[in-house]
Picture 1 (cartoon, each protein chain N blue to C red):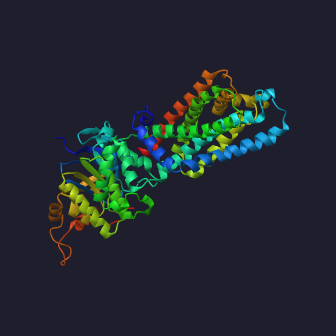
Picture 2 (picture 1 turned 180 degrees about the horizontal axis):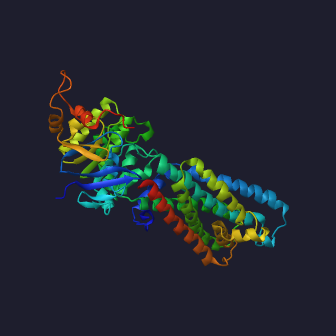
Picture 3 (picture 1 turned 30 degrees about the vertical axis):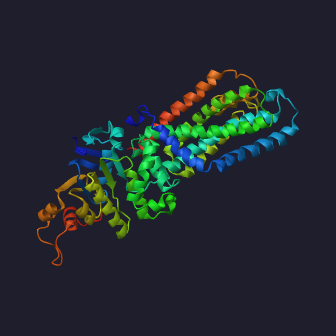
Length: 253
Length: 263
């Protein structure tokens, strides 16, 4: 069976700036792969290329076995996306958001109506079925966006900073749900700024900076390799130490 | 120039159209009444107020009353306005503010399908607007012949012809403020130069030539005779102009929007 995602020598330039400067990575089925990096490292552009929303200058992408961008539309049929910024439909209730989104996949209404209560239950929003989107909290909206990304029962989930802007309670609830999805055999590609999120969820991760992958491996291996001695005697070394060691302490934006 | 490659359309556009329809259904009654109010005020105000000063059955008004003449023009102008508003303000909200298009494109729907759905949605809404006025006009006894039913597809074509250029403006607009220019520089002058309020031969010869190039002129020339129970003189010319405008502008709008959203 084809890998859920395979990216080879991907390059994308905007004007003089090479935002993605030749990166390669692949996801194995059932794993959570994290893309970490400071703002402007090229994470979101990489995701957009993978989804076929931006045409790369060079390189090859195969998502769920389909070449992208040539067959991006077909590939996206088996992928779920949680974008960085909420784009739920403000004119619809929670359930209508899922119904309308499912129709974009040409899933028939009967199947959708059977799936929607389960997805709302999964997102902890069963009591909000008919609630207007404008009345939902930030955490609820993120969970609904996650439920929306599952409407087509995707093989691969692409999450762009899924917990940015959420309070710790809301963040932990999302992590718990994502771990549940991994246990069900879903594959996840995730970008994040939260090292704790990456350490908890990701089997493997890549640290990007200035369009390049500068380190790749399991969280434990990266820590062992780059921070042999903890910078603080009070705690063990962690991924944040690795991140700052590799990408420096200068502000990026 | 790959942004301007030919459209790759699919039936997924139907789901986009249905999404907009579902939103509209929630506010259908106030929306229809709101769309009717403005053109009706003009039609009755000018039609009876100004029309009362004029003799009945002037040849310049096609042998009927001024209000009958104006009613046919109002159907066309109202269709144009509805298509323009939908593709400017409403489509811009979905593209830029709410990021609805972005969400849809995370599913297996291409931008081409999103834009096709928007085009046909705006044309449908414009048709509703034009037909609502047509019904009022018919109830007033200002429509004589069942030939007026042919006005309905002509209204739809007019909707397409004005939805497509609206999508071009939306593709280029940095913000809502920009749309005012389209209305004040293009839509409003065209309304006055296309035979909506008065016959074209009232205009100086040079301006009449300009009028012949305006799409609204062709919509009026197609639709007004149908309401008067006559067959339009050169229907194929008018249909070709409106359809050609819709096709060319849709292609350009798609290219510009691809450049804006998919770079």
